[in-house]
Image (cartoon, rainbow, N blue to C red; front, side):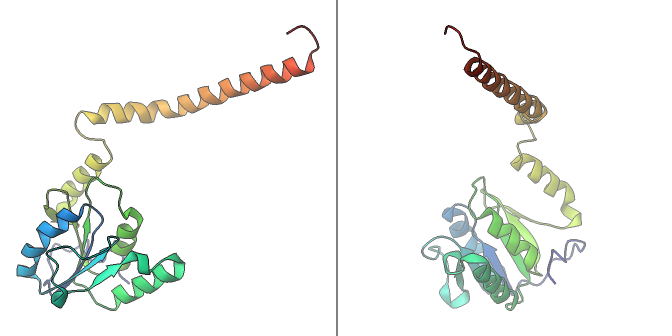
Amino acid sequence: MGRLKRFFSKRIPKLNHIVIVESGDRGILEKLLPSLYYSCPHVDVVTCFAGPPRSFDAARGVIWNIADYQGREGRARLYSELWDKHYSAVGIVCADQPIMTRWKWAIAAQLPGKLFVINENVDYFWIDHGNWKMCVRFALFRAGLSGADAARTLTQLALFPFTVVFLLLYAGQVHARRRIQALTPGDR
């Protein structure tokens, strides 16, 4: 059972076979692949794009296109096929783009390899307890809870319930007024 099993180990596994979920701009993976091939002989890619990245070497990996795995049965088949490959690491592209968000996290949770995150600058870090501060900072940044946006985002979160209550009360008042006007005869 995968489920991020290597989170509590700082040890980086020997990179003999990894899979990367291309859940961001195609250019990110095209820049990353040449440097990955130096340290890992086999790199597979899970993608939603039509063809492989320009720098992908078909002799050193497989392209898994999610269009071939639609529906619950298709996803289960993809997870099973990926599981059978025994990847030593799983990379997910976490760029500031909502591409394949559910796929990347589902695959990361399903596979036993150590997880690493690649950002839009083609930097990456390992998801383990030794990098917990980096993971928290990254998550806060992606959620808009760091820097100048933090105050605005927190204010929006705090005001959201009041906004919903106000809108519901307003809608109730408008509908009640219409109902009363419809029931009372008189001049309009």
